[in-house]
Image (cartoon, rainbow, N blue to C red; front, top):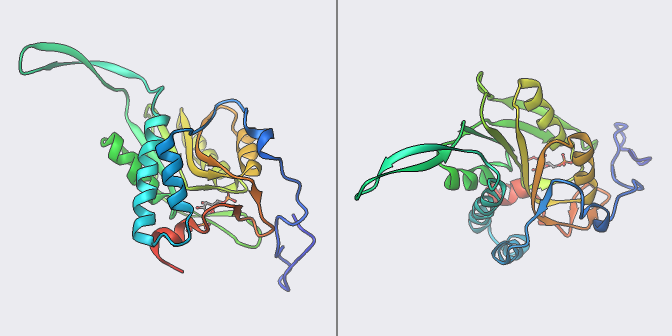
Length: 236
Ligand code: PRP
């Protein structure tokens, strides 16, 4: 991607000179939902603050995950369920068909917990992808997808959508496995990665807490929040 390379021949500044779309070019992409909720905006500011320590950062990721889950589940299907209230029986509803959550390890773990707190009865399908910091290519190192994926929906969750490589690869893996309905949720997206994901998978809904300006030469989202994995787990 870049003409600057390390001694090993890998690009050192992988986004240097790479053209990137602006925010205005991706604001109205189809099936992209960017949160406008004031509580989300409030929590995002605390999350971005470099003085927010890991325990508080992790709690915020979970809370933002719960807010994203609330927004991302608005279109889910329901089936009837007859129950007894303390006074009489009635026909209520329950979520149909099972829900899977795929956190992209490791930074997606906090978001998955936030989704789980809202939805309770979910399966967590862990998938480990790590982004090579030189090439920005995502590499799979762990996969605990179940045999049966015949669920209503699977949510792929990862705090950061940077170049889009991890998200695109994950959705590819889920589709190859036979998952029929997929949504993607992240905390911060860069326009570059958002456009790539939208183009690669036009059939999924994308939920975002905040849309940032761009990727810097190293491929980090700016203004961003730094490394979401390190800040959740204290590995500086
Ligand atoms: C980060 C982030 C995403 C990925 C985004 O993970 O959590 O998974 O990079 O980049 P992309 O859109 O360019 O693929 P990282 O590789 O730092 O791993 P970690 O979760 O273990 O910290």
